[in-house]
Structures are given as structure tokens and as C-alpha cells.
Image (cartoon, one colour):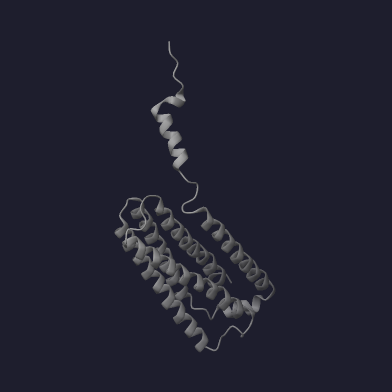
Length: 205
């Protein structure tokens, strides 16, 4: 009687092939080193904010009451929605529908534009009320943290715009889908940072 090893069955071979082709992380490995570095930098700023706040509770609570939480909520919804659109774009890219990928990325860009417009309106309103980076420690942190994140949103939008343009030209087929995954991962990082920043600055008091 001939003995057949389980490893030689078609199912086992298919499983081995899946293990070879599957990746633990989407996108290129280099983007994850970059994302981890960005998260580390923001984490330092968040910890510094929390530490200084503990030693200046009255000042921070006073500043908190002047923030526009409606603008913060709108921007939170805009970024969460944009991340959903980016997920859809990656799905379309994997299915070979590059025009569909471009279309979803464009919707994500619309959400990003909403964030930018609302944030600029919020800054204008805050400055018109007489508050600036030099008002006190709370506003120094408020402007620094939110503007640092704002700059990342702008950079992320540039990345999404390039991906959308090149996807419409058919540049991301086969293994090149990893480029779309890398851009999507960076955008999700931006969304994650805002989800931490929003309650930290706008909600907790």
C-alpha cells in the first residue's frame, strides 16, 4: 500500500502557495518603516501635550471651551469617510479595475478637500477671536499639533492625486497594486492620527 504524505495533496500545495504569496502587511515594507517613524514622532507630541496639560489644567480647560468642536466633528467624519473610499479604491485595484480605483480615490480627495476647507475656516475663526500660537501654552500645542497633522493631510492628498492620475492611465496592474496599497496605508495613518488627536484636544477636559 502506497502512503501519500498530506503535504503532497492539492489542498496542501495550494496552502503552501498561499503562504508564499500572502503578505503580512499591505504595500511596500519601506512605507511601514516610514509610518512607524511618523507614529513615533506624533506619539512624542501627544505625550508632551498630556504631560503639560496635567501641570496647566486651568489654562487648558479655558482654551478647550473656545475650540470649535463642530468643525472637529465634521473633519472626523470627512477623514473616516475618506478612509472608506480609499479601501474601496484598493479593492478595485486588486480586481484590475483601475478606473474604478481612480474614481474612489477622487472621492477620497473630495473628503480631504472638505477637511482642508473646514480646518482653514476653523483657523480663521480662532485667529479672528484673538487667539494665536503665542497666546499661551494651550494654543501653542493646539496650533502646532493640528497644523502638523494638517500638513500631513495635504501631503496625503498629493499622494492620492498621483495615485488617481496614474491609476486612470493603467499604471498599477499586477504587483504594482502594492503602490496603491502603500499610499492607502499612509492615508489610513493620517486618519488614525486624527482619531487620536481629536478626542485628546477637542473632547477630553
